[in-house]
Amino acid sequence: MRAIFCCLLLVLLMHCQPAGPTHAVIQTNRGDIEVMLYPETERHAANFIKLANEGFFDGTLFHRVVPGFMIQGGDPTSKGAAMDKTLGMGGPGYEIDHEIGAPHLHGALAAARTPNPEKRSSGSQFYIVTGELQTDNSLDQIERIKGITYSEAQREAYKTVGGRPDLDQDYTVFGEVVTGMDVAEAIAEVETGQYARPLEDVVIEKVIIK
Image 1 (tube, helix red, strand yellow):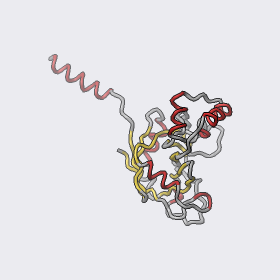
Image 2 (cartoon, helix red, strand yellow):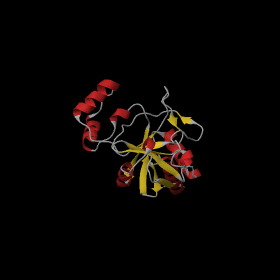
Image 3 (tube, one colour):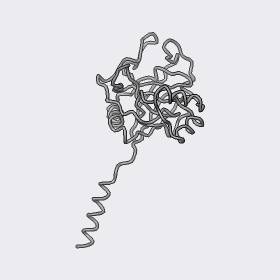
Image 4 (cartoon, helix red, strand yellow):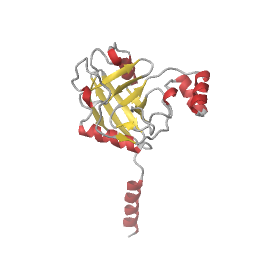
């Protein structure tokens, strides 16, 4: 009886353990980017997983890329879009309440949004930060402007890895790149035309949840 009880207790404890972070592989025609989704941004993570499993991102483009800044995708109207079509306004028909917290370090996965006072995120559009190295002076300036106080670890990361602190407290970061950052950086450097759209389509072929 005691052995049975111990086995049942072990099973119960295993089921009660918090799930680890979910990973997703963004497969593109330029290579794969694997990201880890933050459990603490549960609304954004769950939404990204849902859309990926539905195939929502399949065939969409990284439609806006800016060196030293970010690459942006997730607009459903970008599928097969003509080169003269204006992109960046499409979505699934809803927005997500913000879960602002994590900084925009190099490799951050964040939600795009329209200008709205509640800072609600786009239902599908996201970006990956490439960013630039920061200095103590640039971080001091961001702290004064935005009323942010960076930890020593965050300051060190911005100075040694880089990012875009000017976006902090305005957009939700809900994950980070774990492999394939070289692919994201290469995409950020492709030749672009109007509205920073690549002249040769950078296609998100599929997003696979691991």
